[in-house]
Every structure is written in C-alpha cells, then in structure tokens.
Length: 233
Ligand SMILES: [Mg+2]
Image (cartoon, rainbow, N blue to C red; front, side, top):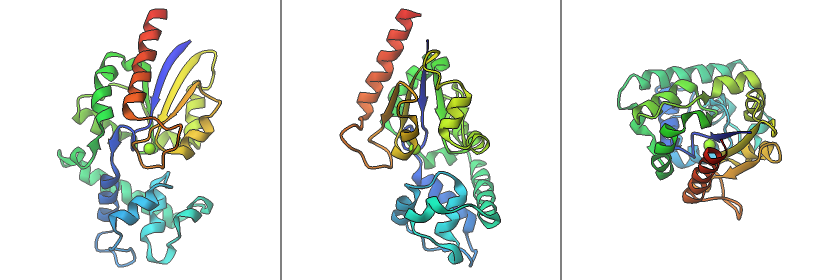
C-alpha cells in the first residue's frame, strides 16, 4: 500500500485570499459594468463558496449579482467564462512581477511542512481549484516546487476534486493509503469514506468544528505516517 499525502493549497499551505482579491480587482479595473467597490470582507465571505474563478463574476458584474448561498445553483454562461478568462489573464500579468508571490502569506504549516516536502517529494501531491501555474510559481518562490500539482485545469476536465483523485487511483484503498487535508468542508465531504484519512484544517477559510485539526496536529499526523511508511517499506 502506497502512502499519498494530498494537500489543498489555498487555506492550507497559503493564505491567498488577498491575492485572489487583487486579481479580481485588476481584472475589472476601470470597467463600469463591474463593481469597483467590493470590500475585502465582502470578498472573503463570497470566496467561502467559490470553486472556480468564473463565479467571481456573480460578485462583480453589476447586472448579475447573486447572494453567496445561490451560487451553487448557477450554471455558468458565456459571460461567466469571459470573466474567468479576464481573471486568469490578469493573474498572468501580475505573475510577471517577481514579487507577485508575496501577495500570498504562507501559513506556519507550510514552513514546518517544507522539509518533509523536500525529503519525501514522491509521497505528496497538491490538489487545488487554483490554476497549476500560479501554484508552482508560488512553490518555486519558496524553493519547494518539487511535488505533483493537480489544479483548476484537472478539476475542469474531470469535474471535481474527488474525480481527479479517482483518476489518480487514490480511491483504491487497497493500493493507496491517502491522507487528504483541506480547509473547506464541502471539498472534504465527498472524500468521507472514500480515502483513509480526510482531515479538516482549522486554519483556513471555513468554519471549524470539533473534528477540525490544528496545524500542529496535522503536521504530527503527516510526519508520523511518513515514519511508519518508511519502516514498512
Ligand atoms: Mg482551500
């Protein structure tokens, strides 16, 4: 059985909310059809239910605003996809600035995990709704671009995080012992019972409950699993 430690990016490794907010604002700058007055607090609240960049269109476009609780009911149309293209073009432009990764704050968890990532790179994978290039560029900034990254592109082609995991074979519990760490309960729920150990990170963007884990608890679990897997290898 192969140990695979699968980590979400935003809200687990990096606090990237301000980066996403900055990208949205750059994408709509000077465009009268889009709100120029979205506050960071409002953005954070909305972001809690966002799984794809097109959804920010429903926070910014003046004629299509909806409450966050209705976002899940929306099927994206051409205007939504156009917003997503603007979002990624804006991010690409911003990524040309070598200081761009500084818009994202690494959690202590990332710094504590980094030696393990470097030492056991084949044991880890990142599974995120963020685009792959921005994840890898951020990791490279911290000399840690060493693990496979499955991002927005994979999720669009497969449909969901759990579908990407399935395509990798990680749901085969005979072959893989998977620990999956995510800060969003809605992303974790599909993994419940499908992988050995889905863990809720209590330091990210979602509400925590009695089952949520602290950064140190998750780190202890991951390092213990790595030790055990080395003994049995
Ligand atoms: Mg997250």
